Picture 1: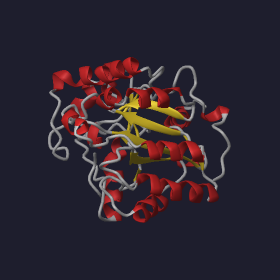
Picture 2 (picture 1 turned 90 degrees about the horizontal axis):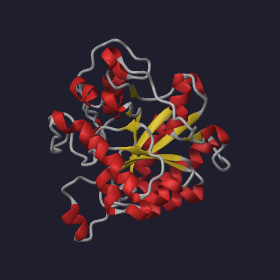
Picture 3 (picture 1 turned 135 degrees about the vertical axis):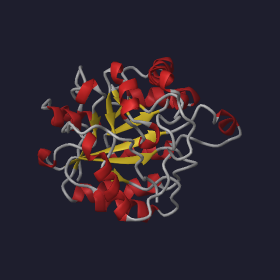
Picture 4 (picture 1 turned 120 degrees about the horizontal axis):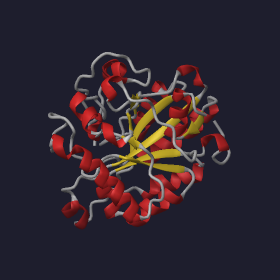
Length: 291
Protein backbone atom coordinates (compact mmCIF):
# COMPACT_ATOMS: atom_id res chain seq x y z
CA UNK A 1 0.00 0.00 0.00
CA UNK A 2 1.30 3.45 -0.92
CA UNK A 3 0.74 6.60 1.19
CA UNK A 4 -1.14 9.71 -0.12
CA UNK A 5 0.46 12.32 -2.39
CA UNK A 6 0.15 15.84 -1.07
CA UNK A 7 1.10 17.94 -4.05
CA UNK A 8 1.07 17.67 -7.81
CA UNK A 9 4.79 18.38 -7.66
CA UNK A 10 5.31 15.02 -6.05
CA UNK A 11 3.53 13.36 -8.93
CA UNK A 12 5.78 15.14 -11.39
CA UNK A 13 8.78 14.07 -9.36
CA UNK A 14 7.92 10.41 -9.67
CA UNK A 15 7.63 10.75 -13.41
CA UNK A 16 11.10 12.18 -13.55
CA UNK A 17 12.48 9.48 -11.30
CA UNK A 18 11.04 6.71 -13.41
CA UNK A 19 11.99 8.16 -16.78
CA UNK A 20 15.35 6.33 -17.06
CA UNK A 21 13.54 2.99 -16.91
CA UNK A 22 10.57 3.51 -19.18
CA UNK A 23 9.64 1.35 -22.16
CA UNK A 24 11.96 3.44 -24.31
CA UNK A 25 14.83 1.51 -22.69
CA UNK A 26 17.20 4.39 -21.99
CA UNK A 27 20.69 3.17 -21.30
CA UNK A 28 21.01 5.04 -18.01
CA UNK A 29 21.71 2.66 -15.13
CA UNK A 30 18.65 2.30 -12.89
CA UNK A 31 18.75 3.69 -9.40
CA UNK A 32 16.51 2.98 -6.46
CA UNK A 33 13.02 4.22 -7.26
CA UNK A 34 10.64 4.99 -4.39
CA UNK A 35 7.65 6.76 -5.92
CA UNK A 36 5.49 8.97 -3.71
CA UNK A 37 1.97 7.67 -4.05
CA UNK A 38 -1.06 8.36 -1.77
CA UNK A 39 -1.90 11.97 -0.66
CA UNK A 40 -15.77 7.72 -23.11
CA UNK A 41 -19.06 5.16 -23.53
CA UNK A 42 -17.29 2.01 -24.58
CA UNK A 43 -18.91 -1.21 -25.57
CA UNK A 44 -17.93 -4.62 -24.24
CA UNK A 45 -14.17 -5.20 -24.39
CA UNK A 46 -13.21 -5.20 -28.03
CA UNK A 47 -11.03 -7.64 -29.91
CA UNK A 48 -8.27 -5.05 -29.67
CA UNK A 49 -8.41 -5.15 -25.87
CA UNK A 50 -8.63 -8.92 -25.61
CA UNK A 51 -5.50 -10.61 -24.29
CA UNK A 52 -3.60 -12.28 -27.15
CA UNK A 53 -2.57 -15.92 -26.87
CA UNK A 54 0.98 -14.76 -26.21
CA UNK A 55 0.79 -11.57 -24.12
CA UNK A 56 3.10 -8.81 -25.28
CA UNK A 57 6.15 -8.04 -23.17
CA UNK A 58 9.01 -5.61 -23.57
CA UNK A 59 12.52 -6.63 -24.54
CA UNK A 60 15.00 -6.88 -21.65
CA UNK A 61 16.63 -3.64 -20.60
CA UNK A 62 20.35 -2.84 -20.45
CA UNK A 63 22.48 -5.81 -19.34
CA UNK A 64 19.45 -8.07 -19.64
CA UNK A 65 17.63 -6.47 -16.72
CA UNK A 66 13.88 -6.78 -16.35
CA UNK A 67 12.25 -4.15 -18.59
CA UNK A 68 10.07 -1.48 -16.95
CA UNK A 69 6.90 -0.09 -18.50
CA UNK A 70 5.39 3.19 -17.36
CA UNK A 71 2.97 4.28 -20.08
CA UNK A 72 2.35 3.88 -23.78
CA UNK A 73 3.60 6.45 -26.29
CA UNK A 74 1.45 9.57 -26.24
CA UNK A 75 0.91 9.04 -29.96
CA UNK A 76 -0.85 5.71 -29.33
CA UNK A 77 -4.29 7.32 -29.13
CA UNK A 78 -6.67 8.24 -26.34
CA UNK A 79 -6.38 5.02 -24.38
CA UNK A 80 -5.97 4.66 -20.63
CA UNK A 81 -5.41 1.64 -18.39
CA UNK A 82 -6.88 1.52 -14.90
CA UNK A 83 -4.81 -0.76 -12.66
CA UNK A 84 -5.78 -1.93 -9.20
CA UNK A 85 -3.38 -3.32 -6.61
CA UNK A 86 -4.89 -6.14 -4.55
CA UNK A 87 -2.54 -5.74 -1.60
CA UNK A 88 -2.22 -8.15 1.27
CA UNK A 89 1.04 -8.90 3.00
CA UNK A 90 2.10 -12.32 4.19
CA UNK A 91 1.73 -11.17 7.80
CA UNK A 92 -1.83 -9.81 7.65
CA UNK A 93 -3.69 -13.08 8.04
CA UNK A 94 -4.59 -12.36 11.67
CA UNK A 95 -6.08 -9.02 10.70
CA UNK A 96 -8.16 -10.67 7.99
CA UNK A 97 -9.31 -13.31 10.46
CA UNK A 98 -10.38 -10.52 12.80
CA UNK A 99 -12.61 -9.04 10.10
CA UNK A 100 -10.45 -6.54 8.20
CA UNK A 101 -11.31 -6.64 4.52
CA UNK A 102 -8.50 -6.53 1.99
CA UNK A 103 -10.92 -7.12 -0.89
CA UNK A 104 -13.43 -4.72 -2.41
CA UNK A 105 -16.41 -6.48 -4.04
CA UNK A 106 -18.23 -3.18 -4.48
CA UNK A 107 -15.43 -1.79 -6.62
CA UNK A 108 -15.29 -4.89 -8.80
CA UNK A 109 -19.07 -4.79 -9.19
CA UNK A 110 -18.83 -1.14 -10.25
CA UNK A 111 -16.18 -1.92 -12.88
CA UNK A 112 -18.38 -4.69 -14.23
CA UNK A 113 -21.47 -2.46 -14.26
CA UNK A 114 -19.52 0.26 -16.06
CA UNK A 115 -18.03 -2.35 -18.41
CA UNK A 116 -14.47 -1.21 -17.81
CA UNK A 117 -11.49 -3.41 -18.73
CA UNK A 118 -8.83 -3.31 -16.01
CA UNK A 119 -5.64 -4.97 -14.84
CA UNK A 120 -5.49 -6.27 -11.27
CA UNK A 121 -2.04 -6.60 -9.72
CA UNK A 122 -2.66 -9.27 -7.12
CA UNK A 123 -0.49 -10.60 -4.32
CA UNK A 124 -0.39 -14.34 -3.84
CA UNK A 125 -1.47 -13.88 -0.25
CA UNK A 126 -4.60 -12.01 -1.46
CA UNK A 127 -5.42 -14.88 -3.82
CA UNK A 128 -5.10 -17.33 -0.93
CA UNK A 129 -7.41 -15.24 1.26
CA UNK A 130 -10.02 -14.67 -1.45
CA UNK A 131 -9.71 -17.60 -3.89
CA UNK A 132 -13.29 -17.35 -5.14
CA UNK A 133 -12.83 -13.70 -6.05
CA UNK A 134 -9.43 -14.34 -7.63
CA UNK A 135 -10.92 -17.12 -9.75
CA UNK A 136 -13.90 -14.96 -10.74
CA UNK A 137 -11.63 -12.12 -11.85
CA UNK A 138 -9.37 -14.52 -13.70
CA UNK A 139 -12.28 -15.90 -15.71
CA UNK A 140 -13.86 -12.52 -16.49
CA UNK A 141 -12.70 -11.22 -19.91
CA UNK A 142 -12.90 -7.64 -18.63
CA UNK A 143 -9.96 -8.24 -16.33
CA UNK A 144 -6.41 -9.53 -16.51
CA UNK A 145 -4.51 -10.71 -13.44
CA UNK A 146 -0.89 -9.66 -13.00
CA UNK A 147 1.67 -10.36 -10.28
CA UNK A 148 2.21 -8.07 -7.27
CA UNK A 149 4.50 -10.53 -5.44
CA UNK A 150 3.39 -13.16 -2.96
CA UNK A 151 4.12 -11.34 0.28
CA UNK A 152 3.89 -7.62 -0.61
CA UNK A 153 7.25 -7.26 1.08
CA UNK A 154 9.57 -4.68 -0.46
CA UNK A 155 12.27 -5.47 -2.99
CA UNK A 156 14.41 -2.55 -1.78
CA UNK A 157 15.27 -1.14 1.62
CA UNK A 158 13.36 1.88 2.95
CA UNK A 159 10.13 1.34 1.01
CA UNK A 160 7.33 2.87 3.08
CA UNK A 161 8.20 0.74 6.08
CA UNK A 162 7.44 -2.57 4.35
CA UNK A 163 9.39 -5.66 5.43
CA UNK A 164 12.08 -6.52 2.90
CA UNK A 165 12.50 -9.68 0.81
CA UNK A 166 16.13 -10.92 0.85
CA UNK A 167 17.72 -10.74 -2.59
CA UNK A 168 18.08 -14.51 -2.82
CA UNK A 169 14.31 -14.89 -2.22
CA UNK A 170 13.01 -12.26 -4.63
CA UNK A 171 12.52 -14.54 -7.60
CA UNK A 172 10.92 -17.23 -5.42
CA UNK A 173 8.49 -14.68 -3.99
CA UNK A 174 7.24 -13.80 -7.49
CA UNK A 175 7.03 -17.46 -8.48
CA UNK A 176 5.10 -18.26 -5.31
CA UNK A 177 2.47 -15.70 -6.29
CA UNK A 178 1.94 -17.41 -9.66
CA UNK A 179 1.59 -20.71 -7.82
CA UNK A 180 -1.06 -19.18 -5.54
CA UNK A 181 -2.97 -17.89 -8.58
CA UNK A 182 -3.01 -21.36 -10.14
CA UNK A 183 -4.20 -22.94 -6.90
CA UNK A 184 -7.01 -20.37 -6.70
CA UNK A 185 -8.09 -21.27 -10.22
CA UNK A 186 -6.82 -18.22 -12.10
CA UNK A 187 -6.31 -19.64 -15.61
CA UNK A 188 -3.73 -17.35 -17.21
CA UNK A 189 -1.99 -14.74 -15.09
CA UNK A 190 -0.10 -12.21 -17.18
CA UNK A 191 3.71 -11.94 -17.37
CA UNK A 192 3.56 -8.52 -15.72
CA UNK A 193 4.95 -7.70 -12.28
CA UNK A 194 4.47 -4.65 -10.08
CA UNK A 195 7.00 -4.16 -7.31
CA UNK A 196 5.38 -3.68 -3.88
CA UNK A 197 5.32 0.03 -3.15
CA UNK A 198 6.60 0.58 -6.69
CA UNK A 199 10.12 0.40 -5.21
CA UNK A 200 12.91 -1.21 -7.23
CA UNK A 201 16.58 -0.86 -8.02
CA UNK A 202 19.13 -2.58 -10.25
CA UNK A 203 19.52 -5.46 -7.83
CA UNK A 204 15.76 -6.12 -7.83
CA UNK A 205 15.54 -5.90 -11.63
CA UNK A 206 18.35 -8.41 -11.92
CA UNK A 207 16.80 -10.77 -9.35
CA UNK A 208 13.58 -11.22 -11.33
CA UNK A 209 15.10 -11.00 -14.80
CA UNK A 210 14.98 -14.74 -15.40
CA UNK A 211 11.19 -14.82 -15.09
CA UNK A 212 10.49 -13.14 -18.43
CA UNK A 213 8.19 -10.55 -16.87
CA UNK A 214 7.77 -6.88 -17.66
CA UNK A 215 7.71 -4.66 -14.57
CA UNK A 216 4.76 -2.27 -14.71
CA UNK A 217 4.82 1.12 -13.02
CA UNK A 218 2.46 4.04 -13.78
CA UNK A 219 2.37 7.69 -14.73
CA UNK A 220 -0.83 8.69 -12.90
CA UNK A 221 -1.11 8.40 -9.13
CA UNK A 222 -4.72 8.26 -7.96
CA UNK A 223 -3.98 9.02 -4.31
CA UNK A 224 -6.72 6.59 -3.26
CA UNK A 225 -4.72 4.77 -0.59
CA UNK A 226 -5.98 5.88 2.82
CA UNK A 227 -7.97 8.67 1.16
CA UNK A 228 -11.28 9.85 2.62
CA UNK A 229 -12.28 12.28 -0.15
CA UNK A 230 -13.46 10.47 -3.28
CA UNK A 231 -13.82 13.73 -5.20
CA UNK A 232 -10.18 14.61 -4.55
CA UNK A 233 -9.09 11.18 -5.80
CA UNK A 234 -11.18 11.54 -8.95
CA UNK A 235 -9.86 15.04 -9.56
CA UNK A 236 -6.24 13.88 -9.22
CA UNK A 237 -6.80 11.13 -11.78
CA UNK A 238 -8.63 13.37 -14.24
CA UNK A 239 -5.91 16.03 -14.00
CA UNK A 240 -3.16 13.49 -14.64
CA UNK A 241 -4.45 11.27 -17.45
CA UNK A 242 -2.91 11.64 -20.90
CA UNK A 243 -3.10 9.32 -23.93
CA UNK A 244 -1.51 6.00 -23.04
CA UNK A 245 -1.59 6.57 -19.28
CA UNK A 246 -1.44 3.88 -16.61
CA UNK A 247 -3.38 4.81 -13.46
CA UNK A 248 -2.48 3.15 -10.15
CA UNK A 249 -5.37 2.53 -7.76
CA UNK A 250 -6.20 -0.08 -5.12
CA UNK A 251 -8.93 -2.63 -4.48
CA UNK A 252 -8.30 -2.99 -0.76
CA UNK A 253 -11.44 -1.87 1.05
CA UNK A 254 -9.93 -1.21 4.49
CA UNK A 255 -7.09 0.95 3.18
CA UNK A 256 -8.68 2.50 0.07
CA UNK A 257 -12.33 3.03 1.00
CA UNK A 258 -13.11 5.78 -1.52
CA UNK A 259 -11.91 4.04 -4.69
CA UNK A 260 -15.30 2.78 -5.84
CA UNK A 261 -16.87 6.24 -5.60
CA UNK A 262 -13.90 7.81 -7.39
CA UNK A 263 -14.13 5.27 -10.22
CA UNK A 264 -17.81 6.05 -10.69
CA UNK A 265 -16.80 9.66 -11.36
CA UNK A 266 -13.63 9.04 -13.36
CA UNK A 267 -14.98 6.53 -15.87
CA UNK A 268 -17.88 8.53 -17.36
CA UNK A 269 -15.83 11.73 -17.42
CA UNK A 270 -12.90 10.16 -19.28
CA UNK A 271 -15.31 8.56 -21.72
CA UNK A 272 -16.90 11.97 -22.26
CA UNK A 273 -13.40 13.24 -23.11
CA UNK A 274 -13.03 10.51 -25.73
CA UNK A 275 -10.84 8.04 -23.84
CA UNK A 276 -11.10 4.30 -24.32
CA UNK A 277 -10.31 2.01 -21.39
CA UNK A 278 -7.91 -0.85 -22.07
CA UNK A 279 -5.85 -3.38 -20.16
CA UNK A 280 -2.13 -2.98 -19.60
CA UNK A 281 -1.47 -5.70 -22.18
CA UNK A 282 -2.86 -3.48 -24.93
CA UNK A 283 -0.67 -0.56 -23.91
CA UNK A 284 2.42 -2.77 -23.79
CA UNK A 285 1.44 -4.14 -27.17
CA UNK A 286 1.36 -0.59 -28.53
CA UNK A 287 4.74 0.19 -26.99
CA UNK A 288 6.32 -2.98 -28.33
CA UNK A 289 4.78 -2.74 -31.79
CA UNK A 290 2.33 -5.61 -31.15
CA UNK A 291 -1.33 -4.74 -31.52
